Length: 114
Image (cartoon, rainbow, N blue to C red):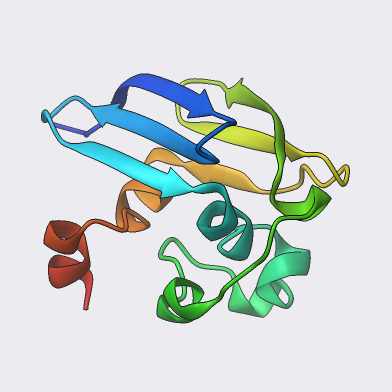
C-alpha cells in the first residue's frame, strides 16, 4: 500500500508545512528545509543529480528568512505530488509523496534514512 497524505496544512506564522500521512504519521517541515531540499533540476545542480531521495546534506543547510523561504501557495500535482510557490517566484520543484516522506525531519524518520 502506497503511503499518501490525508491532510496538508501550511502555517505561515510558524513557517512550517504539516503533512498527515495515511499510516498515521505526521511530518512537520520547516519552510527553510523544503526550500533547501527543492527537488527541481536547477536547485539540485542539474539533471544528473536528480533522484527520488533528498540529499542528506539538506538537513544541515540553514536558510534565513527571505522571500526564498516564504511560502506563497501550495498546489496539488495530480494525485502524486505538490508544488510550492515561494515568494521569490520559484515554483519548479515537484515534491512527490515519496520524496516528501523521505524528507521528514523527525527523529524516527531520520533514523530510518541515515
